[in-house]
Length: 203
Image: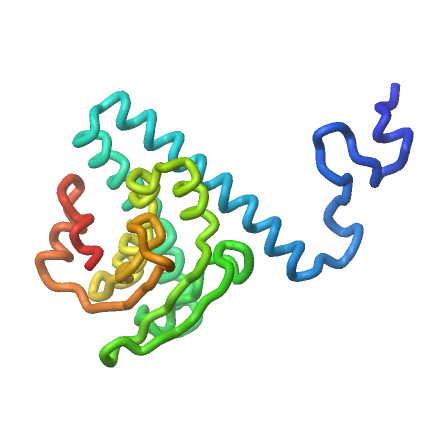
């Protein structure tokens, strides 16, 4: 027995399953790729909120937030450790110059800019897809916890450095702005602690 979609050809869309175009059917243009990545980012934003809401509901705001941040730290550590292994496998030292970008080039943000602020190099990301979802749901505070993944991944890559947010969409800024800075001994100790306050490092 064949389903309706099979009878009408491989590119016929089944109800609720999109336009029926499968990978390999055609060359994907940049805008289409951007929209596909954007969808994944929006789903990721919802996934984060869902887990975070349940955790805080079960454990309370203080303990729940601490557990969420611990999970985000582990998540970032996995990314940073992989980036470190990649750099070393290529014969590089794990320095900021050799960090292999782990985010998609298209779809996660609308555009990127680079600026010099008081002699410090900064990257600005406009139109974060995840930040927009959190704003639409009025969940910027809970969503903001996800952003600490950037601190975690960089310190796992090399604990002597951190990737901080000087501005973020969830904090009410018009864009997200990042800067790589050196860490201090206390920050490294607090980050290495299994349980404890490390979110303050994002400064």
